[in-house]
Amino acid sequence: MTKPPHESPDLRAGRARDGINLVWLKRDLRLGDHWPLARAHDAGLAIGLYVFEPSVWSAPDASRGQFDFVVQCLRELRAGWTRLGGTLLVRVGEMPAVLDELDHHLRASLGQGVAGMWSHEETGNAVTYARDIRVGQWCRDRGLRWTEIPQNGVFRRLKSRDGWATRWQRRMDEPQAAIPQRIHSPLLPPQIEHGDIPSAAALRIAGAPMPEAKVGGEYAAREELESFLDHRGLNYQRDMSSPVAAFAGCSRLSPYLAWGAMSIRHVSQRLDAHSAALRDQSRGEPSQRPDRRWLASLRSFSARLRWHCHFMQKLESEPQIEHRNVNRAFDGLREDSWNTKQSQVRFEAWTSGRTGYPMVDACMRALHAGGWINFRMRAMLASFSSYHLWLHWREPSVYLARQFIDYEPGIHYPQFQMQSGVTGINTVRIYSPAKQVLDHDPTGIFIRRYVPELANVPEEFLAEPHTMPLLTQHMARCVIGVDYPAPIVDHATAYAHAQAAIFARRGAASARAESRRVFETHGSRKRRAGS
Image (cartoon, rainbow, N blue to C red; front, side, top):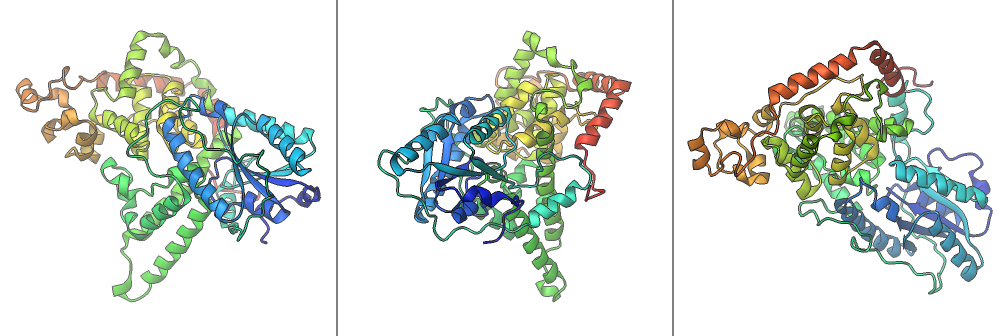
């Protein structure tokens, strides 16, 4: 079998022991390109394990939409695992207590317990980070080897960002793991139950299903990728910015990558192969040449794949930025904003899609329905909460984390801080919600769908419905302050205040010094690939 990425020279020392090889599944719910499965299978008898941990699913960034997607992925994965002759156990409980119980039952019934554990590396939130530390200690206490294999372009214990892009490409070019023709699992006695997949109610996960959410699973992931490369991605460069076009024109792979229903390496290699084929066609007969838009769109999408891991690397290198400003010079800028009733009212309006700004409200309501919105609109939501409403980024970021089915902590928190202006190294972008309407939904296709109160508002007033004459409001059956709220803040006033406050803090000598540290740790640069 092909050697997996980054296998340590002494790895085989852990295979000499008799026992069961455990494949611990986390954010890698697939059979394809799954090196932990391939190596555990290669080592001998193997069992898969997925654990629904109450501490993880009760965390403030977890949600019903994410849970439903994971359950769909897991059901498909378990069926595939079983077809290959393998056993995939499901448990509800806390790690490593689940491992204790499983190891005990295996020894009692089979005379041999867990000999080694295999999993993918994970860049998760603080809850899963602490959990992994406990699991590592459990393995060390028992002399077990826990082998973690990278599954993306994030590097642990990275000393320098220099040459990161080159390292990322090498990682993407590594071989994919083949799906075993058969998974050899021990025959388990009845007392070791395979375990049922729990319901949301059993885990006390509140919320209703999202009616417009993507279906989870590896099969759906591959369908999304192929349809994107076949026809949906033609206008990707243009479509990605508009919520009208983005739902079809974006790849829509983000939830599958976030929960591991497909590896980013598979996407990268499939994209490279497809792009190479298109380049070959472009040099052929004129009648057979592909649309010129394809290569530009695929180059843009390829850059997004690197961007995906670039942001995850930030949280991997500095886990504290889930909770605190990456640039400490901005500490105290907005943290006490939550002490006022006004801020609570503003936050409630923002979360419920009732700010009086149509694009903001439509985006939030679209998230409630399907758990996804395009990147520009995510940035606008973060910008609006931070600049217009002047809210510290932490609570709004956690709220949006729950709405995103594709929630990836390593992308989410660094991005939210960037859009909040507290990194010190990124351009400050204060989005105008009215301009976003004019630029990306001038006729109101998206807005009218998710904010039906505005269904009859004339196009010329759609960006700022509060400017409609009263007679027009009545004719449109949209009276401001009755059927739809007036703007919760004045754009010009909020813009001026935010810009002055941010740049006053940013211009301080302490902020400039701290910005240099932030760039050295997290900035994007490509030099000295071997360092």
